Amino acid sequence: AQTVTQSQPEMSVQEAETVTLSCTYDTSESNYYLFWYKQPPSRQMILVIRQEAYKQQNATENRFSVNFQKAAKSFSLKISDSQLGDTAMYFCASRSGGGADGLTFGKGTHLIIQP
Amino acid sequence: GAGVSQTPSNKVTEKGKYVELRCDPISGHTALYWYRQSLGQGPEFLIYFQGTGAADDSGLPNDRFFAVRPEGSVSTLKIQRTERGDSAVYLCASSESSGMGEQYFGPGTRLTVT
Image (cartoon, rainbow over all chains, first blue to last red; front, side, top):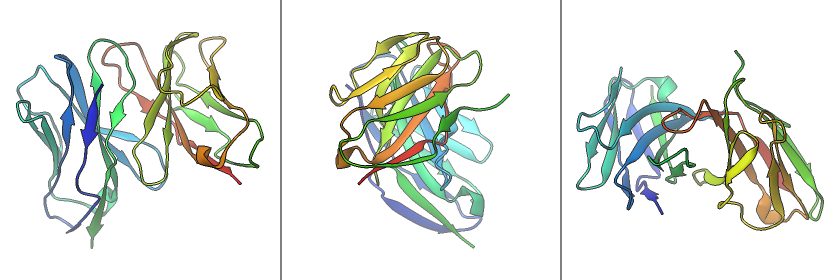
């Protein structure tokens, strides 16, 4: 079984600042994948970034990057130059790499970008 | 191409009634997933289809919940004898195939049991 923990229920930063969202996970799998999803008030889950556990290099997508610490089972998301449109719930998720299993999600962090 | 669609967007029903929630995946996606998201929580996995068959239904909470995908495309989540605790947003996702295929989510159906 996999577990994902997000310890920050809510965060608030000023526009243009950099913010880091924390996530820790636990798994017995040797091959797995990690994800960050964004959920705006429209409820539509949008994939922000993903990381294959076997890759040492941290994934980057434009203003979004991750700090993947495999030994510590930590997977934080950094958002640079934050924008008002980044305001949303952010969920960390994991999935085993053996097949197409469902995702295991954390409880989420509500990120608020202040103008 | 259209994304994943779910109908209805909102459903209010009385305790004890039967409900059906529909998911139309992205055309050509063979994998389909159902999740349940309770208020203030992350989504919880319910069931996964590969084609017409349920490959993993380990997340279904009890036998009141059932899902079908008879032709390998549209899926219906069925809930019998609804209870107030079933109130949640039910999310559907689809992906191209097994493995690393990205899961694309629909907007969800908000179910309220009164």
